[in-house]
Length: 232
Image (cartoon, rainbow, N blue to C red; front, top):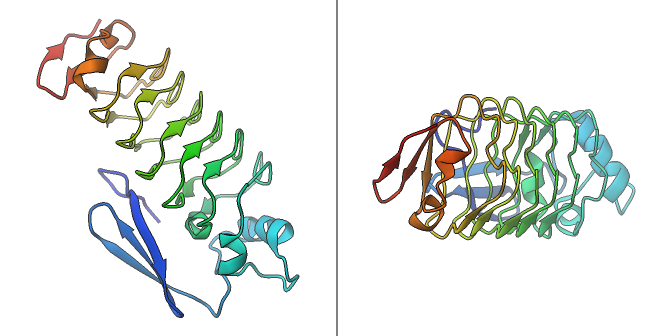
């Protein structure tokens, strides 16, 4: 499934009843997913196998919604793993942090992050074939090089609560085309957008724009207030 052709889908809320899970996006769109009994139906068999191996508390060979909600750390479960899809991560509602290197050099292409996530660790998605990432508005911090060398990443967002874009956050994301930074952004780390070869435009709030970010990147940098600096 695709995350969207233009803007990434940002999860605003997740709720559930006895039969369905309702995912509300920031656009107002609501996605209704049926429950199969009390267990999660995984799209990717490898993802299911790893989840069941690590968190199947009652040893029934399945992962229930309650078992997923009880998870507080992913650890190294998916590091270097041959998984492709993990949109079911949205059900891990007790997860507040994605650990350092959590998906480092894995095969993950699609993931839906939990709505109440607060942080993403260093190199969390380093060198993965991730195609798009929707970072929830609840996220306040992202570690260095979190998406470094995600060569086919096309779509990403920066949550409004983040004030700093960390060093090398999107470095080596060859396919990333544009991004708008929130008004509260005051600092852009070194090489944050290095080697974003298809990047055409970055919109910066006034505080970050004053840094003269165009000195470091070969694409147009503009202020959200309307001023534009020429690229070098």
